[in-house]
Length: 309
Ligand SMILES: NCc1[nH]cc(CCC(=O)O)c1CC(=O)O
Image (tube, rainbow, N blue to C red; front, side, top):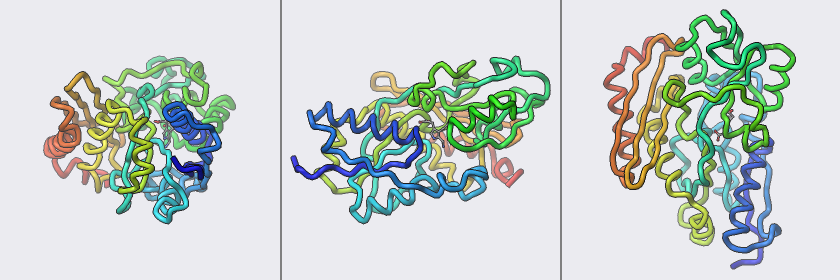
């Protein structure tokens, strides 16, 4: 083992820092290494700097990753820790997702001020969310709800809620848990009627292809169930690429040698949707996800994607 510390790249948000620390802690335990062997290097990304517009408007892909990936490719970082949900389906040449940590709870959480649950919110209530998927899923269940764009750090969103700007907001339960805010939600949404985003709740680690010193280290903390489930979900997303303004949900679960996937695409107003379910061997995780993507594309037809683009 080298004596120079490994350089771990991360964004500077409290959630990103928590994820980088968790990764470092797992490596320290796995290899019985002191904290000094891992240097956490904080970088600011475009997604961090532009906070007043929905991500889908700024351009979507790579907003939270570009700066980290440049530093990986130039050798200034050894690996980078990300929320898998924020990762583009195509990575730059030379980089790959080498490991996933055990997945957190995948569910979306409601933080309600004027009522605890989506169902009980008053007629015409205002809900803050800038995720296209959450907006569409809310409207699908409650067409009367007024959804407004709501971005920024978790604390900023909770402050806006407390100040009365909205009746409720939706956040990933995983993020809240990692920030020690597991008691904040007033409702946890069932994935069967409020399916999560592909890769929600999973931390991934990105590194250089062929960097065996680093990749052997990361392989020791890779969680295979999460790796396969997220690979399936990302392949589904990849098969639907080119329609990044489409609300997309997808969730895979691993059970022994089997993997089960459900996916959904919706119109932004939540008035129409298509879903798909597929099951198979987990060795085919990515193939199954891509197949599900093809199936749902065919089901929906091109006019579904064209109807609001
Ligand atoms: N782009 C924001 C983002 N990326 C990952 C998470 C939550 C943690 C996760 O899903 O792993 C969040 C915040 C949210 O959706 O509430």
